Every structure is written in C-alpha cells, then in structure tokens.
Image (cartoon, rainbow over all chains, first blue to last red):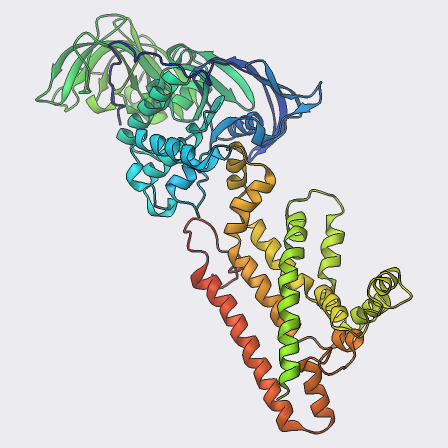
Length: 388
Length: 234
C-alpha cells in the first residue's frame, strides 16, 4: 500500500487571507493523569505549534485523545496552561478555564460524532448558530461544495458512506472557522485514494486559514504523507519532535521505528520509470544502491522516500538466482541483535545499512554472524514509497 | 359504565402526564448530568412512589395539602378553599405518584445519547442547554413518548392516592378505579366488569403503542442506540 505521490510543484495558490483567520500559535503545557488498559499514566507535555499541520503520533493509549480533549475543553487537565494566540483557554494558576463551547476550536473525533437525526447540510450548518439563516445556508452550501458532498446534503449520516461521513465531519468543523483544528485519526477508516484526496482538501483549506492543525495518527505512512512537523507521544510524554524523516528514521528509538512500521527508511531519487512493467528504478541517497520499486506518480529526478519493513526482507548466504524478487543486494553482516525470539541483523550493502528480521532457527541454520557475506533480497512490492 | 368518572379520569391523566413532561424533563436532565455526590439520594426519592404503598403517599399528600400545612394555608388564602378533596389536590397527588414513571424513561434516554455528540456540539459553539435542546431532546423522542404514556397509564389506574387525597366525590374526584371499587361494593359485578375491561384495553393499547414505537418508529436514525429497547433477548 504505497501512498500516492503528487509532487506539489508550481506556485502556491495566492494567499487570500481572511481577516478572521489570523495565524495563531497554540501553546500547551499541561499535566493530567489518565487511564488506559495498561494502567494509569501521567500526560505531561509542553509544546508550542504554529499554523499548519503538526502530526501527533503515538500508539493507542499514549494519551493522544486525552491531550486533544484537554485542548478542546472537553476534559480538564490537572494543572498547566493552554493558550491560543496568547489568549488563555486554561490556566490553573489564574484559575481560568474557558468552557468548551466558547473556545472556537474545531474537533473532529475518531468516531466523527455526526448528529444522526440531522441531514448532512444540517450537520454542517450546526456550528453557524450565531449567523442568520440565509448566511448560514450560503456558507454551509459553499463548504459542502468544496468538499464535493453537495449532492448528499439532504441525507442523514446513516445513509452515506464512510468516506462521505468523514467529509461531512471535516466540513462541519471547518465551516465554523475555528482558531485551531484537532483531528483525531480522521482518516483511519479510509482507503488510500480517499485519504489522499481528503488530505489535499485539508491542505487547500489550511492555505487560506492559517491556523494550527493537530493531526493525530498511529499510522506511520500517514506521517510521511503529511510530511510536516511531527511529535511522538509515548506513555503521556513527547519523546521526539521534528521533521518526519528526522524523527522517524534516525532514531533507533525503538518506539518510533516500531510505530512507523518501517525499520528501513531511505531517501531516494527516481532514476527511470518503467511504465509497462509498473515499476521504477530508484537510487538510494547514500551509496550507489539501486532498487526497483512500484511505480507511483513521480518524475525522473524527483526525490522521495522508501520504507521497507525489516520483516519483509530475506537473507541468503549464496548469490540467489531464479528468484522473482527484483532486488538482490550483496552485503556484509555488521551486527546481530537478539530481541526475544526475533534476531535483528544489520547488513551493510555498499554503505547503506539494512535492518533484517530473522527467526532464531534461520540464524542458526545459516550460521550467521558478524562479518559474514550475505545477499539481501527485497521484493519490489515490499518497497513503500512516501513523499518528502 | 360511568362516563362521568371515565372522562374525569382521562382529564386527570392528560393533565398529569402533560405537566410531568414540563416538570420531569428538568429533573431528568439534572439526574442525568449532575455530578453532585449526593445525587443518589434524589434518585431514591424520585423512585419512592414505585415502592411506597399508595396509602402512605396519599396520607402525606393529604397532610401537606390540609389547612394545617403552610402549602395548604397558602392555597386557602389564595382560593378560599382547601386543596384536599378537590380535583387540583388530585392532580398534585397524582403528579407525585406518577413522577418516576415519567422521569425514569426520560433520564434513561438522555443518558443513552452518546457523550461524543455532546462534545461535538460543544466544540461547535453550543452551550449545554442549546445542546440539550438540539441534540439530546430530539434523540430522546422515544423516551419522552414512553414517559408520557407510562405516566398517563399509571395515573389512569391509580386508586390509593386518589382515595386518600380526593375522597370519592362524583364529578370531582371519583375516578374509574374508584368507580369499579364502588360497583363491586354494591355487588354490581357486570357494570364493574364493563369498566374494568375498558381500563384494561386502554392500558394495553397504550403500552403497545409505547413498545411499538420503540421497536419500529422513533429511533430510525440508524446510528444511535435504541433507548428503552435493551434486554437479554437482544
């Protein structure tokens, strides 16, 4: 399942900034005890995010939803401060706590929470309570149109598909022009094409409405697809923060590698497209290694990122032949690390290091050890391509 | 068949269950959303009429309405007559007597409205009361109808409280259940039988409507759960 890549070249749409939506930063410094199935944790975070996407990445139970609930005002922190554009929403020292309904923060919950008794249009116009009826109708129609769900406006949530519901939920939150947007795994249930087109819609909206968007996910591929600032939350703490490639690949930080699902992540350049075969050739940034990967919408010379799961790789002790796999890379084992019943082998292939997961039996049968010459076998479709 | 008693009873039940919509919704709202630690005491008090002998309830209502109580004196100074043994007194007694039959279905259906919907409504700028009006009430239609119908049916059939508070004044406080009792006392079994059957059929129809609505009618929103329709057979 590779993320479809559209390289966002060309001029950005001219910024026609609505005066209502002045860029504001969101500052959060809170502590809160929360429970998950594994016990009681303390959510203890301090961060500041600017307009644009910030990805909040973490396993389920890491405290992501608790954090969003606190920002939205649906749940009270134990202490700390939450401020948007300098205005305090919550401050335990000043005993200040603005009610959720006065915060003007858009929140799309994982379960969407569409009102089942209202039509799509009524759901979208729900948050425009303070406007007159004609203006309310005009704005919600515009929003329905820009999300391409205008034809569904009279249907109830139960009568439309999952992807359409997701659009209604997003439209409902965006139409109110919130000061910040909290998205709790809004794309979790969607297939890839739907996902990418929704992300594109969100980006377009964010071009015109420069507000912070906190986007929660536990899907590593989404992190790369969105490609912005990412914060990794683990057991209530932020354990890493930065650009996706810094955070997600560099660290042998085990939680991150495990969460992203890709132990091997490489920067790559597209060398050639083989449209007839449905593949393309990419050169890995460091060293001279070439990989044959699935074809995605990309041009020769463009840069992208390749993720490979350590469990998808094969090791051979003799040069294999007669294999269907397209990539057979000679290398040398640098290190073997045993974790429980999995052996993790670090293999140096001409300057590029691969992590390969093996069983104990495979290690023993092949008599693997540091210094041994091996061939790493990479199936074309084990290569997951991600945008930069 | 004593039509005077019949229409008196229908009038009483209609007034009582309508007033219970007005009184019961705020009480049920409070019971559903309050985080007061002693809330359970109020819950117990509201449920009391279910278990209390109607004569006990009736006795206290009678005392409270009498001219020795502040309420009774206030009413007397206002209207010139006591509340006891009047239709108004009967309404007050019946309100208390049928209160749990309205409040409990209301509260149960408010409680089944998904908390995430309430959170979404708040994030969209609606105060708790606006949320209640636009989300909770419409999604609790089945519970409201159930509460109305149950309190109506319960008031139709009340006996002990009516006898204690209202006595047995034809056209004023003689309801059909008392009329049946009178007819049996005078060995007029066939007339008692007629009235009893009318009461039985009406009550059965009312309950059928309630259960039918819960089963087929009001909860066709698809996404929400069906309040009042939970049980081991589901």
